[in-house]
Image 1: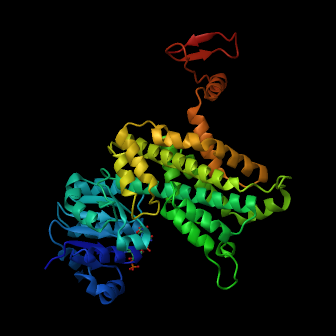
Image 2: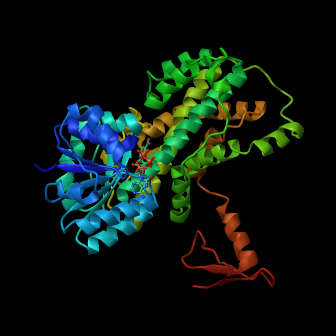
Length: 475
Ligand code: NBP
């Protein structure tokens, strides 16, 4: 008998994905470069379903039903290229290679184009939810051809997380669309975590409370509009006490946040697309700042903080809740703008509302909030910005006074809140009728004759700044 689908690369993610497939009744061919992992999987979990193990790639490919469907779960980068080439050599037109690793979307576009030439469908797929999601239901974001989705979609929807019975897996779009959307998902995850960290830091410093005293506040927030997996686990982490020292767990962890690079990719892409993703950028840079202990030590020795230390009122808690929610709306609005811009750039025809739906379960940013994004795009698919959707505008208007107080307090007591502050600046920037960009244009015309447009006439203009300052129309 042949397998319905195969998984090659059986480290944490691949092994759990293979088990998930098997548990759903799909016969799974399994393979790994070093045979030990394949044998371990079958020995430990063989009873969970039908596994067809192979030690050689040729045998693995031969064990698949046609058209063949093989998922690659190996280290992103050169390893992925090597495995794709091995599989493609052994496959036939109409077969499908799925890359479930964290590939850069530009690599996915390149690989898809190369394999298309050979008649093989290449499906770059974002898979979110870590090892737990891979086993029990991830959020799945596949890119690739319509034909490949027809053949793979039912299996992927089968093993994906479900929310209200709806699977967290849709066909995102062609070529690199799936990996792009996964990248932005990760960027948004960075900003969500940064905003939570700022909330914790500001409340702890301003109120002089312990992490354990903050845990119930997050637990309470989790019951309202902020309800989400990340808020839920924040309460757990803050409550945790280090067994060895008896001190709060957060106080024994080195305060340098690491990154694997998807946040950086998101910001790099946003710069190319010209989309301000300040929330994600600030979160990425905040991690970078944390990772420079020598600079921090040198600065801490000589740079002064504010003279006021003033204890804040308990009302700050409710203000921070508002600031967190408002800043979160901004970060998501920016991320969705980036996906819309990429969709135009690459002709992906992304359905933004559907993307909100597949992030509702299985992934790290899962939250009830995403239902509101879905509703906003359902009501108006051409929404210029999520900030202008009636529900979000109302929430922002209700939050903005508190948000300003939070940023003011943070500035006064010297607690850095780059996420809150930049989100508020973005909010104020977008709602301004006139921006000082007009002055920037004037300066550019002065030093570089870069020309400007007028508010009252069509065309481009230049002022003779070094001469008699007369204006001429240049086009
Ligand atoms: P790793 O990223 O740690 O990769 C280990 C796997 O890659 C092993 O199966 C290893 O085989 C295989 N491999 C390597 Br390394 N080089 C190879 C080569 N040249 N040829 C064939 N196989 C090779 O595994 P992971 O943490 O399970 O993640 C798999 C993918 O899923 C990655 O792209 C990752 O970014 C992505 N991802 C991970 C998570 C997560 O939470 N961990 C979440 C979402 C996505 P070996 O056993 O023979 O060394």
